[in-house]
Length: 287
Image 1 (spheres, rainbow, N blue to C red):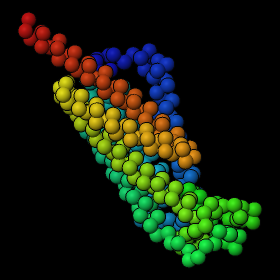
Image 2 (image 1 turned 60 degrees about the vertical axis):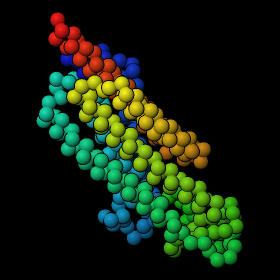
Image 3 (image 1 turned 120 degrees about the vertical axis):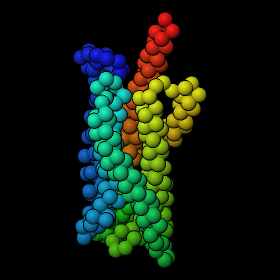
Image 4 (image 1 turned 180 degrees about the vertical axis):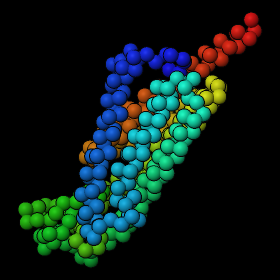
């Protein structure tokens, strides 16, 4: 709500609002969860350390999530928490500057996802069939995208699920079946990142238009159906992650969809308020 003084303590801390903020806190915690996961993978992928050029690639999900959490909070402040009369030019300028940094990091994360996809093309098939990994004890086996386990005597005979092995540099190995799953997961990362960028760009346009008056029926309906298609893709990707056992990705995707449903609800209510205010003003002018 954006009408003057409409945000009293009851509205800000209702059960619905508390649930919304709990979702936001879960998403903030996911920054740490992704960091832990990517830090472990970075040690294996970059045994000599991660240089600045490879940092964005190694920690793409962490950077991406941190930027998105900050962007989400800005949307929440602008579409719900801060009344219109307090959205002064200096505050809007501050939000624009912060959002610009967020979008820069989000774009960098997209590049990181795409670089990871390209790096998968560097895995080479090992000549001949070597289903037995026991002669590779001490090396690392990729069982999912950027997820590795050390090959030891207790697991070396059961890790490979296909006859053909692939390798990347020294000490990294996988098989054709695990590589195929990793490839599709990488594609999902790229598509998911691009899809979310389109979602927020449309939201930015909506917010910008609503600060200047209500949206026309055609424009509002068009935007609604375009976003419905984009969210359908996001839901499909989330299900894909869940199907392949990528729980943290599935959970994170699900939480983000829920969070942006809240933002969409904010925008719809804002549209209704702006339209009502314009109707009142129009009626007053005719009187």
